Image (cartoon, rainbow, N blue to C red; front, side, top):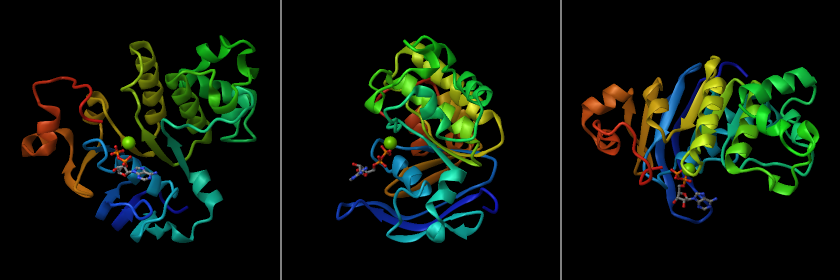
Length: 251
Ligand SMILES: Nc1ncnc2c1ncn2[C@@H]1O[C@H](COP(=O)(O)OP(=O)(O)O)[C@@H](O)[C@H]1O
Ligand SMILES: [Mg+2]
């Protein structure tokens, strides 16, 4: 892959015969930067991540990495270059460590443990009945939502992909888990990667290089937190400058 900038250009997308979710959607994501996607629930944030991850193809328009249309990419190449961290992390009925190592089959134990540590997962994994070798069961039923997300982050850290897509899911976690997930995300973001994240919490959004507000199937506002606040548009209404943190209501 030649460069990790991402370009969605004039993308139309619907799920099957359903209503159009994205309509002439264009967004440039610069290499090595953090771009946050915000907007009302159902506006298409997760859909944009799915299109970048090649889980779906656009009905019209293109998704390009490093200026090259991904339409011709082999699935393995996408897998190698893109790490997707979201709520429905796929876990197979194997040991927790096998589930993480799957991100980089050749990784040694030390590499896997380092990934656990950075993902803030080391403590709870060691506390499982058989520690690192515990089978986590179909769909990881043994793990809480926050723990599953940290396993997913450990995978992404181990994969070390140039593009990281993150669907931040802190809204339905308890406080302790939320803190742990946020620290894990901070570690994931600490090295220079191209990151697109659906962000719900203001501290992360504030630190983003660019924020894209999605409305009506396209990017309605684009800029830094300060720029969008100064604009006095939908973003500034959403976050309300006086409220340090707003929960619920907006995803
Ligand atoms: N797999 C799917 N099949 C059909 N419709 C979907 C699917 N996923 C999402 N949608 C619909 O597409 C729209 C955008 O969803 P989504 O991208 O998940 O929004 P957001 O992440 O911003 O909340 C919503 O109307 C949602 O109901
Ligand atoms: Mg979503």
